[in-house]
Length: 187
Length: 199
Image 1 (tube, rainbow over the protein chains, first blue to last red):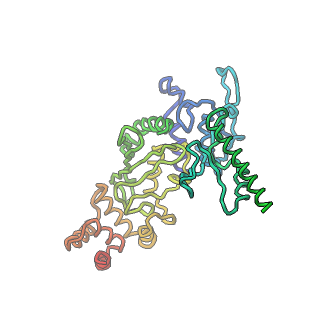
Image 2: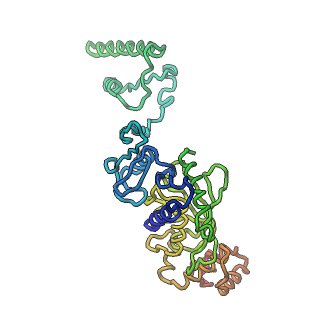
Image 3: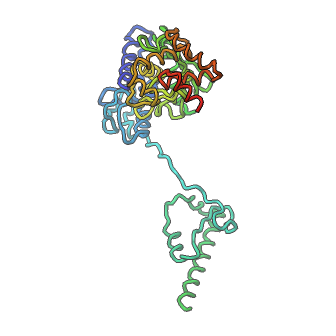
């Protein structure tokens, strides 16, 4: 079934745009990207001879990371298996594969834990998150100290009021922690 | 909708409208609204099949990620086919799922569906009842498919004896569509179909 579709697609390209028969606009059909069907921008050609815009092909490869195949003929394809095309008109030949910034990957941040266990325990809306548990307090403290890159909002920019506030709060809690440990030692 | 999806549908639309299959009235695509997210397709039943002479309407929904993901297609016209649900019209076709490729178009999808009507794949069924009948009782399958094509897709009436059976049971106060499903699923055995309808 899929083979039939591919071959009929190929047949249409050859059949409906015969060379020189239509007006000049039709000749550009030979240089259409097989994905967006527009004239290929930043063109690359696959080993199987199919032309694409690099942005289009890149998105296709991103969509199916574990099944990298040519959208036209399903031959193997990949970033290192396509050839960039440099026409005479292009003044500054640059590999489109390098020029095209890899599209940012989708991110799945953790849902904001609004309220949580202590609804009244917030520190305003400044995005300050403190995650210590009472029971395992020292470990909780380490956890909150070493939890880098866990999807929380980043620190506010320096010199903003929130920054000063957070600096104050973090110093305050460090002192509370030190006093608590000291009390544990002497008690 | 993402720009690339809309731009592509517009281009494909022109392609289908001027393609030769349209000239021969084999496939057709129409807009449902102005946003190009929903389309209405139409395919003719292929010759030398039970679907010959019928016109089958399809609902086509274009996702935002088109053409990187396939369009969502289902039959609006009721059809008796192993790979198409006789209840919902859902289609089991690889290119509408994991075998989709970004170079495929509405035109190739419609042609593939037409090809599916001509060559069913009973080992990968969408409708298990139909697939079983297709494999175990091809003659009854053919007649049932012809009958459904006549009733729902405007095909020629080639199975008057089946019409009579439907009429007989609907005369007992059952809904004609339900009677048709019951008879079709029970090899047109009026007794078993009636039992099924009552239960």
